[in-house]
Image 1 (cartoon, rainbow, N blue to C red):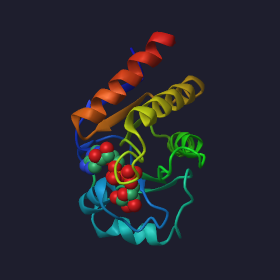
Image 2 (image 1 turned 180 degrees about the vertical axis):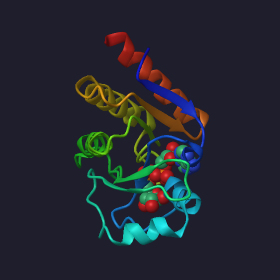
Image 3 (image 1 turned 90 degrees about the vertical axis):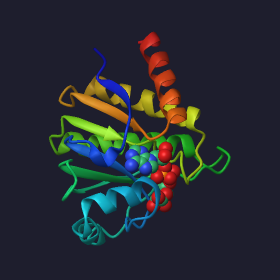
Length: 173
Ligand code: APR
C-alpha cells in the first residue's frame, strides 16, 4: 500500500494533521489556495502569520490551523516559473522537503499538499508533479513516522498529472 495518495478535493476540508499552504514570501495571504486557507481558518491565522515575518522561497513555516479541520498549516512559498533557468526545479523540491521536515518535527502522521506553484506561479503541472512525487517518495523512505502524504488536486488536469507521476514512481520503485 503506497503511503502517497492522489485525491481530487478542497484542501481546506481535510481533517489531517497538517495541510500545506502554497503561500507567498510575505505569508500575509493572497488568492488561490492561500486565500481559501485563510478564509477557512479565520483571522487568527493571519494574526499568527504576522508574527513569522515572512518566509524565503523553498523554505517553510508552521502555524496552528484554527477553524480548519487540520491541526496545523505549513506555509511554503513556491518558485515562480521563469522558464526553468532560475533553479525552479530545485526550489520546488525544497518546498516539499522543508514542509515534510517540519511535519515530521511536529509529530504529524498525515500531511496533505496542494499542487505548489502550478497556479498563479505558472510552474508546468506535469513537471511539478514529477518533482513533487519523487521528492515526497524519497523523504518518506527515510521517515517512517509519517504514515501518509496526499496530493489534494483541485481540478481534473492536475489530478491526472499527479496520478501519472505516482504511477511512474511506483513502477520504478
Ligand atoms: N484546495 C486545493 N487546491 C487548491 C485550492 C483548494 N481549495 N484552491 C486552489 N487550489 C490549487 C490550484 O488550482 C492550483 O492547482 O492550488 C494549486 C496552486 O495554485 P495557487 O493557489 O495559485 O498557488 P501558486 O501557483 O503556488 O501561487 C502562489 O498565489 O494565491 C497566491 O498568495 C499566493 O502569491 C501566492 C501565489
